[in-house]
Length: 347
Image 1 (cartoon, rainbow, N blue to C red):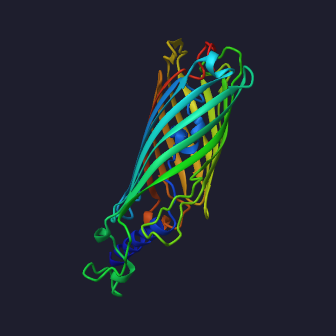
Image 2 (tube, one colour):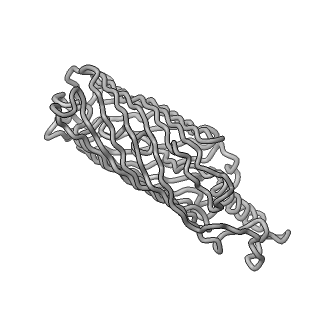
């Protein structure tokens, strides 16, 4: 028992140190359901209107849980006379991240604007930019520090030996991205259509300071995000596959998410007022490099998606302590203009 508690204390202290010195962005396992997190150009890319919400909690079995919430809303603005061969879109997002016993809290709220040029009836290329404001704070007295270990364990009565210039601060942030969409012009149904999304984005282009120590030179790393995501209906069946590859690079960290959902349509739906009014179920398996195997389940009814992801922590350095228990994630999405609706009056 003492050994387990000691491991937990070490992980808590280590996590806090990493949070200060090598801060990384939030991430979700269902990243395709948090579109503005991976590319501002995804605003309006596939739907007339899209609203998403995400909640993630992890490391419950090891230490104080890490909790992350996010929400976004994006929509298209149609005015062909003004915007030529394309359309303008905009989106807003908010996220909050709380880490460990020291309650390191990070908040970010931002606005994304994108213009999508119709190259022809099947291909669209979008450019997006994002401006955001972020803030960070923590409670020093709640932390466990290296100087508070007396050789036998953690002693809260010992001095922390730490000094910080600020316990909270704010910063401005900027990002930009490109997004390509392919969708055939022929009429499609819910189970024989194709949708392809490819994109690249860069966040924190201005390298804002992200440390609680003003002069330590620890600016936030630029994060590069790239992805290929598809929805491929299998003709003459009630099935579709939805493979995806998402890669992100930030400082010394590289994250790769690879896998697919298998979608099963329950009946033949029809398009009504921009909604697909049928129901489908999806199950998926994904792999995140050097970390976890992910299982995913979701249900779609009309324009509403709801799902659950569980991370099995099988490949990281914490697997023995976590006993394979990683994170739980819930996601919701509401959309208009389903990509597999029968009418193609709009992209």
